Length: 508
Image 1 (cartoon, helix red, strand yellow):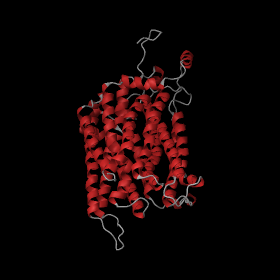
Image 2 (image 1 turned 90 degrees about the vertical axis):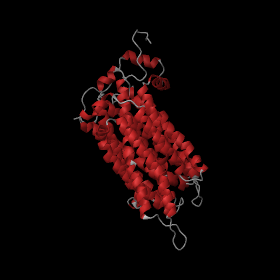
Image 3 (image 1 turned 45 degrees about the horizontal axis):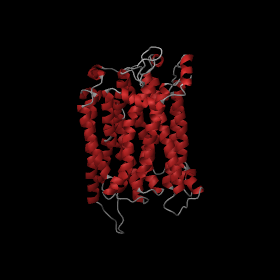
Image 4 (image 1 turned 120 degrees about the vertical axis):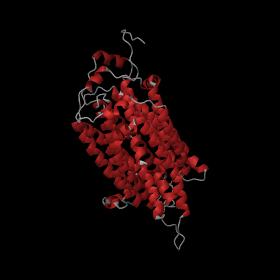
């Protein structure tokens, strides 16, 4: 298609020459490490969301079958915010840089969000919630608003961070893979710290003011965890934004006038154009990623709830349920330790496996097996369930608990690959097609958030059809993981540099 000037109109995903030139210079590794470290601050808060907030919203009075609806806000905001932020950051010409303004704004929104979530019970009580009632509607509303803002903020942070890492990699496929591995490693660090904080039941003693009439011990621990989360995020974000500079993009005055006359940026047209212009490898990547997240999201939603109910035999609100949640957080801590070590070794393991597509396919089969094994662990817990003299349920046997923790740990292997390889492949495929990193990663995000929306909307009612519990959604996840593994190994093309992985080195 020809433009009025006679030049060929670029693809809707294409990066302008000025933007490519800005990222062309070599970047020292310490700057990439600083940017990747933001993932630790983001993931600390995300770990608290995954481990503590599903049980917490049930403590506020939301039934289990509706608890998953709370998580709809994340995928919906991600579907809109991530591509939107990616597009505008690709085309941003602020003197502070393309990505840094969005990263700073996201960090400020995180602070607002965790304040609302942590103080939801206090605000709800001040607004009229009765302490004696099971359901606290005003607290739930405050919690939901904070939860929504937190997911928007996470998308504002993670998308530009990954895009900035791709910019700093200067289109080098080896650097892109290494940068994404570093990002995955710091996600693991954030997970370890977040789950460690969530598994410690006495953290509220460090912040004695966190416990109030409306906020019990569980709530006070959650609030204290968020205090630490805010401090960590502020430190890593400030360091990155201070020491990693971006070159200002100079746009000719005539181009600015044309953009102003056009009445703004046609964002949704760009998204539809991006989908229309996607090369076949990207479409296959979106399919494999979508199936992968249909497998992952039920477990990420209900892992601690599964540990508390099915493994420990607890009921929402009792002490055994709380012990099960803390045990689940311990399992997630072990998961994150394995994830961290695996993140460092993804590149090496991919070489030994003969390419990233084979590695991704194999770990998806590990994911399928682990999700299926939750059924076995649950049946073992039920078969060995013991009661005290008063008829109260006792914690599971050491063998059952060890089996559950082993599953959590083993899942760190496929999770490290999920957090690294899809984003690296998207960067490589889009770079080869001359595509903008921000928007292309935003499009990849659609294959993550749409499955999350389906799981959030359907998993609660689906579990209820089989009498409640979490196993029905886990079984569907196991089937989806197996399908994702098959498609990754048979349909997904190897990236151009994949054939040279055995000879690829690190960067300096």
